[in-house]
Image 1 (cartoon, rainbow, N blue to C red):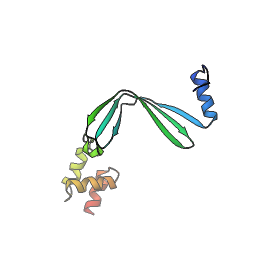
Image 2: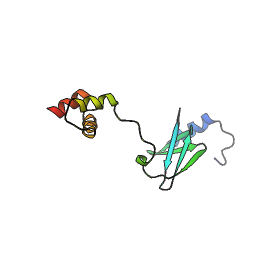
Image 3: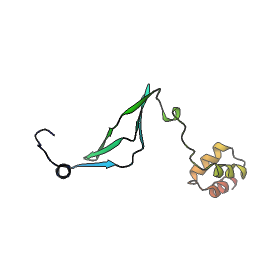
Image 4: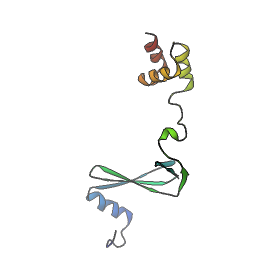
Length: 123
């Protein structure tokens, strides 16, 4: 900050805290992805700082992004890992007349509990 001279980081943090500004570092960040309609920016192992002022959080990302063509919604990007273990989905499908999509939907409703999902679908 201009005019602040050489203030050590601890003093700076205390001063900002008194003004209602809270700054925290996020540890062990693996990746940050920013998707735009025409491209995607991926920051591998960035430094991420959160500054909170009057309940509003601002995230600062420091790192070198790699850019890829495309963008859009997350569903158009790399597929996400399955929400439930494949064995649980198969168990629900094998023990009911439900198809895979209905089994997954029911597992969601039952907080991932396959026994509850089977009871709900057969009961």
